[in-house]
Amino acid sequence: MRYSERPAKQFLFNLLRKKFALSRERQIGLDVACGKMIFRPWFETRRYIGVDLDAGRIREGREKYPEAEGVVCAMEEMDPALRGDFVACIQAIGINSHFDPGNTLACVRKLAEATNEGGILIFNAGLPDGSSGEKIEALLRPHFASVEAVPYGAFNAPIGRPAAYVMAQAMNVLPFLRTVAGERRVLYTCTGRKHAA
Image 1 (tube, one colour):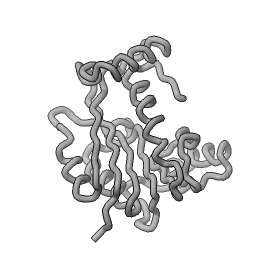
Image 2: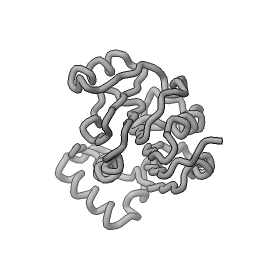
Image 3: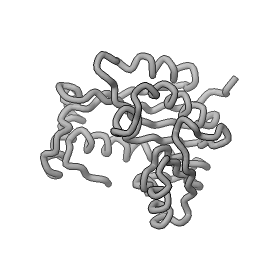
């Protein structure tokens, strides 16, 4: 389990722990914008490939997880042959301070393309003011049998780990707390990747 001092992030981690169980029995796990491969332990795929723009972070991740493979490239520039049965991209799109929000749809398209037929794509995205995420969902729905969008983002200020954990549990029981105020984020779980035409 990962812990955060921010309730919104703790809520995300709690959800992700359950979502990553979907990687069980899958062949290739693709962790896009993996950084130091902090989510490597959650991947239950037979093979793990981390993708990140920062070669130093890939190197650090591979030192900790020598069985992991690493690819240094920007998400937008991933080779079309780089594909996975379980694809995850966490805390990057519209959230990472280095991410250009103008690349949101191009990156989501790239993630969908990197998901093998029958595969699963999980990612979160920060939504700019005025955006409902409709464009993201419209891009995803033709390519997956199911697209689940869970909005969250409220209470993103640090309050300490114990309080953040309790607040995250409250957000799970009382969904309105996830979006009452603060940043607008969505966790997408896309299952059943359809055959690319």
